[in-house]
Image: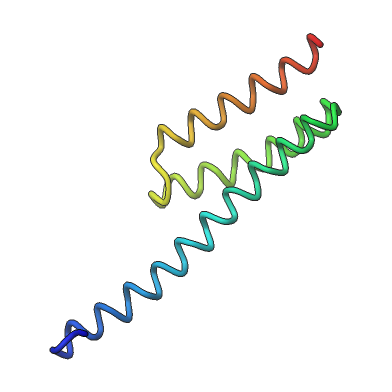
Length: 89
């Protein structure tokens, strides 16, 4: 346990920030799951609409450095290519 007042405060702040980060990470995962469910349903127009909403969430969380920007970009790219594959199928 922290001994100084400063260390106690930093421990409190770290706990608060960890909880916020966990919440944002959960929001990110939920947004990705929603797109994947729309893709599995096979509805391209719905998948595109949900994808646009999810891109905003993914970018916002990447800007806050909850996930790396390259991971966010890779995720968006993979989801986009899956949606494009719906039209071909």
